[in-house]
Length: 298
Image (cartoon, rainbow, N blue to C red; front, side, top):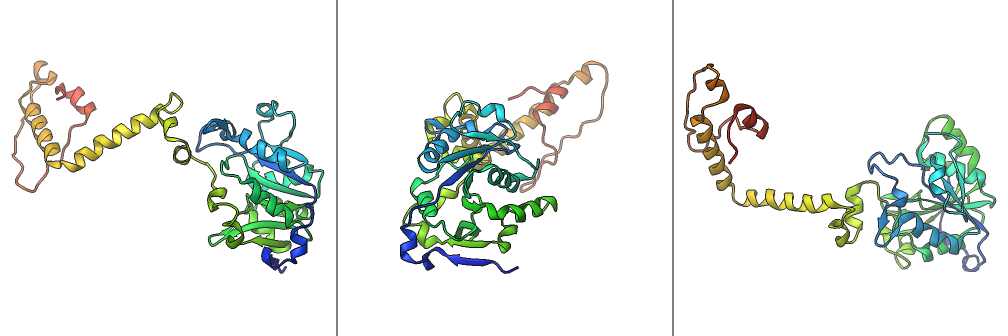
């Protein structure tokens, strides 16, 4: 089936200024958090949780808010949002979009995940003004569509359901059946930086987005350790001669120390070889091997 795609700038000017239809806001918060290890919705970026930041924007834009999650008890504190669970379990973001559209009272819904800390209210409002005879309103960058920051109509439900039943979970897979309006980079940049689509899926991405002071707080003690470790490693790269020197000193101690095996009456031949220039010993003692052999640590 042919995709009826159109650029936002191709619309008539009057339609851009027309009042937006009531739209439901859908927050996708049903991920397994396997890479992060904790519920991303309640992680703090700056001084507030990501879920609170998203809800603050949604309350000003949408007449209805839905939270799609597989852990509804964690979201009972948000009494101004309806909490629903996936109709088709384990189907990823596409299943979440389907569930949100299914329960939405309005014909259109804006969907985004709970881990987008850079959402821009003005840009979402601009997308809402594009609402018309389109089934999908989606930003498009040179690298492709941004389907987790898009507006969908209920007309998408049959096509999405068909993909879910076939276990084809690529979000843009049903676009070819829909009337798609793309919002190009030339419309995005005047309103917001393109990092508005940035999502936090790992702790590394969160550290990059968090203020530096948070990395040294009690919530992120590993950040301090990692920085110290990286400085230690880099210092050795800048002075490799010292590293080899310390290794050779350690080898000297290993060859002259009486091990517990010797004290117990066991003996085995030892042959001391001096490495030639440019060569490197094949065996390097580890902390565990040194403890087992009774070699003191320098």
